[in-house]
Image: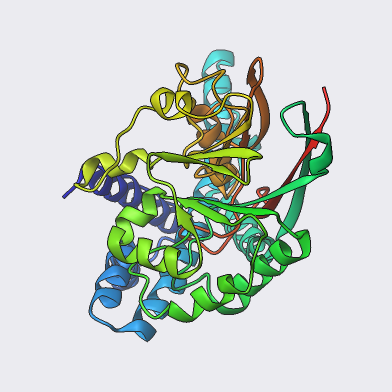
Length: 379
């Protein structure tokens, strides 16, 4: 068992214990009800593993059913926990205030049953809205003026997609809506900055056909994300190539004499055999410095030794937390977890919120995006 899986199980199990305690405090249910609820919660704790096992053995319907059930429950539970925690903090303040004032302030506390219902109500309402938000993809537009783009080139339009997570949930109509945004943007270059696929990637060959319908005049480029390694690197790369992408794994190319595009493997690959571990500074130093240089890197982590050698790093991975308030966690871990930031001098960073969803098919205060970056001549 990997450390990540162990930590996930501990945290997820702890969250279920918290919810069980809250339900019991609110309803004071008996032993039989408690056993049924505990059994359901144990099933939900192991739902992500049941999904992967079902996929691996070809039980696609069961995998999809458990995927929707388990991941929607995960999102609902997280939202319930977040709302309920606010009530716990309030109760703690009331209790602490009573001790300091030497008075009984229990009259202004909120009863356990009421706080449970309010937390559950908020979690359900936000989950319904979040499912809508996850499918309501928008286009973010950025214009960058740079002397490295010749005047005669006009506007060079780069479209970024990140964290699509094609698999049991993101497929069919959901994928079509994402690619419709890409087509409408009319890209000169399309880049996919990791996590194009998710899970075992069974029976998604037809999805490659949808990508083939997008033909930017200067090509399509992709890099690995952590989920390419989770899904099985060989199959993930085969799907990406079939979709018409040139995969950059520790390498760079100069496109039509206009821009340099460099791609690096996601650091998750260090735990696997087939990982291209080439220093960014080394890669970037070997490219024409007079050209605008685009660095594709899945995680929004900046290599300080490479700053100044690229003009724009495009990343994803963080989903801007996907479901608030988890965005507070991603913000602490990645100082730039979404949007645009100047790093130093000519080097800049843009972090996409992602086009799909990982786990719960829910987003809250983190709308999915397709990003359009227009490069134009200027100072």
